[in-house]
Image (cartoon, rainbow, N blue to C red):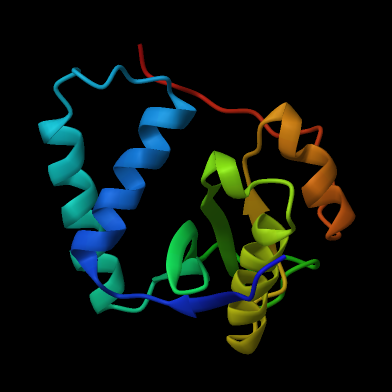
Length: 154
């Protein structure tokens, strides 16, 4: 494999471009769909959360070519015995372009983001995953939480 580097990025235009690519892929959004409002909401998200340091985004590069991305949202929940300070994170937007998959790049992105959370004293990290990526996350120490549920307004 070629040299892979992972680095933090705060370039909102790049982040929004990659976020939209991820959303098109994950949600099978047709290329001709009107995603203007979704793009604007993501732009606002990055503007707010990069400014107050509650989101850390990174890019993966192979020989200086961007091939993947990832992010981690930092927030607090109520303190509990398994998280006395209440600091936690949500791992998201882990994505590697198809021609670069199965080369360990996703794993490098995840490890880099987890390390960023650990540097901030965070030891509880949540995520949502596809069936295909469960093995990857489990190999990195993530466990399935069978008691979680989600409510979505209709």
